Structures are given as structure tokens and as C-alpha cells.
Length: 434
Image 1 (cartoon, helix red, strand yellow):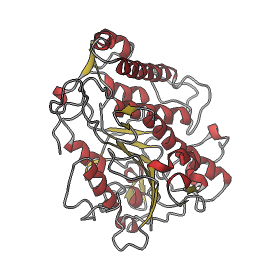
Image 2 (spheres, rainbow, N blue to C red):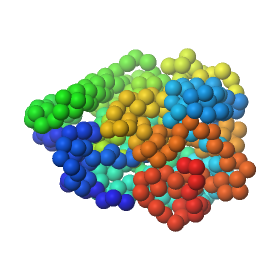
Image 3 (spheres, one colour):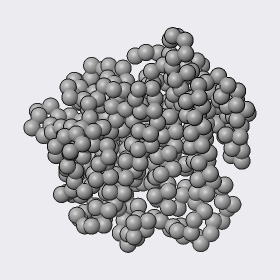
């Protein structure tokens, strides 16, 4: 793995703020070894996992064919613009998910392939995102973003802790990685060096440095810098408005109004806005190389989310998952739209000869095939080119392969980030096709 060091990165700085720069053709910003004068360095590979709990519609999660002519089931239709940059991967599974109980046993090991403990204890295995975060710990300001749109569920289900069904990222076998639900705090994590500066714009703090930078870069890079700063401003303004709408989704508190002063920042009341803000923050993290690793848990495996934004406000997500109704399909497509939204934003950002999507691996998956708890194979879509090392436009089926561990995919993904392990979870060799 090529070493990188945070101290060698290039940043826009202001009082209490440091904001990493996007890829620029006329300025080295990634901290690589010296290159010929007036050339930029290669962009790094990024990895994100988008998790949707409870699986998908039984009859509408499928893909056939290849390339731009690939046919997609209705769940995947939001991704049709990215058929040449996606791989539909069928038949992979986690052997450990076949043991224990539903939900907890199927989700707690999703990104590790490790056995989990019963009896209310908490023990799983370190997940792929956190293993990579540890390897890249000195490369970026934030080792990993761990984002979520639904609070963790307390309690025990069939002797297994519900922490397993609420977390996909694990920093150690006994510690799920803290989940960030607040867009404002996730934004602060990327850009702010000091607490207590929530009243001041990040952009306002760094504009002086940005003005100096403009004189050192090409006209094309000036345009790229302006677009980037505008996207940061847009997220700032939307965060400021988050939580101020009248619509309320999900669980209602027992009090009509809080009995303590409301914090200035909060969780958006509209689940669609919540997910989009988290998606935007993930993209910004990748665009600026402030982080290269992210997970976005759209909901819990045993989810209680409601979807009034889709005209569905009488049934929670988990209840909807037990049927193949039109409502369930709409919810599935809504989740897939989040993956498509991230892919579209990444693909619009040019990094030298490739786009940010080409330089990324976006894994969209669930811990079961459908709401009937079928974990004999997992729904998996990979978006992006892994730095030009992953061929897109394919349907890959490992159902009849005797070695179809999900962890083989993780070994392949780690290889693309120059992390080569002899074994991860229950797998000892990567998938040759990825």
C-alpha cells in the first residue's frame, strides 16, 4: 500500500477550520511523491457501503444481460443510467448468517463474516470498512464516516443483542462503530477542527485561503474549485433548514414539545431529506479526500421507519417487508434512488481521466434477500470502477460456486485499495472477476 500522510495534504484553512481540496490537475493535493511539474497526482480509491435493511421485493430484484442493454428488475430501475458502471452480483452469502436468529445474526456479521455471540452478549468481528480505516488512518483527516438514518434499537431479540441489527460497522469484535445520525455533526466531523463553531459558515472561514489558491491554479481548476465551494455552501444551507419542516415521520415523542431547549442542529423530520443530506456529506467527504471510507446505513435491519414522503404512513418498514406489495416496491425503489443519487453526483466530478465514481467502489446491499429472512444468498450491487480496476456492465452469479462467501468480495475490494490479506472472515481468496 502506498503510504500517505495527513501532514502532507493540501487544505484550505481558516480559524478553527480545515477543508481538504478536491482533485486538481494543476496542483498535487493527495500527498503523493513528487510528480513532473504542473501535473496532478492520481486520485485514490474510495469505498462506501450503503445498507438497506430487510431485503427487497422477491420478484423485482434481478438483472439480465450486459452493458448498456442490461435489463433490470423494478427495484433496480433507478440505477439504469449506470448499467455500464455497475456489477449485479448474485449468489454470495455469509455462512454465519445461517446460524442463530433472524435479523441480528444476519446483520451483525454482514461486513465481517464473523460469528456473533448469543445470550445478550456483544461479540462479532471487525468490519471491512474499519479494517481499511485502520490501514488508512494517517491518510485522511477522517479515517471513516459511519452514517445512519435510523437510531439503534435497544434490547434483545431471541437471545441476541439488537445492536447487531442496528450496526454494520464494527471497530472491534465487541464495539460497533459510533453511528452519526445528525447531518450537521457529520458535516462538522469533515470540516471543523474546533467544537462550538456551529454559528459560523465553514466557507466564510476559508474564503481568504481560497482566494490565494485561485491565483495558483489553471482556469479549469478555478471552475472546479468554484463548483466544489458552491456544493459545500448548498449543504450548509440545507443543514440549517433541516428539522424545521412541519411533516413528522417515524416515531412520535410522548411530549408535544421538548421540556428542554432544542439544540440548534438536529435530525431532519423528513426521511428523504435526511438521506439526501447524508448522501451529500458522503460525496463531499470523498470529493475532498477528507475520508476514503464510508458506510451509510439507510435503516436498521429490524426497521421501524415510516414513509409519509411516499404516501405510506400506516405501516413501518419491517411490516412492509413481509409482503411483495406495491408499497414495498416503492420503498425499495426509494432506497435504490439514494444509491443512484450518490452515483450521479460522483460521476459528475472529474478526477483526471476518470470520474470520482470510476475511482470509487459503492456497495449497495442488504443482509437478507427478502423480508422472509432468506439469507441463503444476498442482494449485492457494486457501482464504480475501483480506480479503473473493476469492469462494469456485468451480471455475475456465484450461486453454484462452492466458494461463494461474501468475504471473497471484500478481499477483492481491499485489493483495489492496495490492502492484501491472506484471509478475511471465512474467505481465503478474492473473487477473480472483481
